[in-house]
Length: 295
Image 1 (cartoon, rainbow, N blue to C red):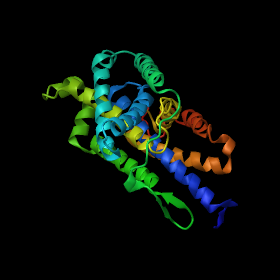
Image 2: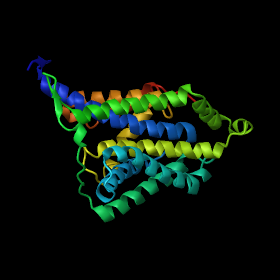
Image 3: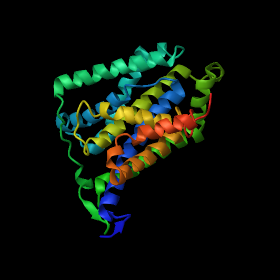
Image 4: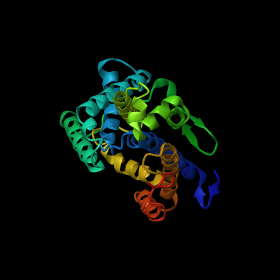
């Protein structure tokens, strides 16, 4: 074992790994938020609850339907995304022309209701979810031990983030989506069903939250509070990256996860606040965020 800046390499790289894993969840969750805000102008405060629903959906599929992690990775985002579509059709579609505050208050209320229902039936303690058999164990890299499941989470999150960015920024479908948010009348004149497109976009953003929940289930216990603990940090990530910026959410999510991990090594007392300190500095220097565009 060798030392870097007086810190044992195993401890340093271990915290870097934890930072990358947290960054993976920050990136996928903030990506969903950025998609919803960028396309729909809705501040979706129920995103943490939908992340928790994804983890619980994986738990239900395993224990009540006998479907494993890989099936949950596909089915849970679809199921939770469908609930998002119902919410958009029932509530959110009436708020698009109103101030952002209305959407925030509605989704905040929904988050409290969803978490309250799950806490009532499953209590506050976490429920275990096993790591899939094919991803158990780890690799000895010499300077640290790398758990295979954690490496999978980092790699898969990166693929999901880049694929989403590519679809929205580089394909015709993404072009229609962006055009529909800026000039829906013009897009509708081409025969495109704009309301349906917006509904599916919200469902997709919710599905991303559920996907992060499924990936988190084997690492953290499945609990009703798991989304509430994370959502404030994820909002800070979105603000730093720039509200509605897809690439900003991805880069900032992974970057802040690493910074948070390094802070735990060099200045542990500040590890819980470092992201909010960075957010305050960024807002002072660049109010639109690092990748955002000023209105």
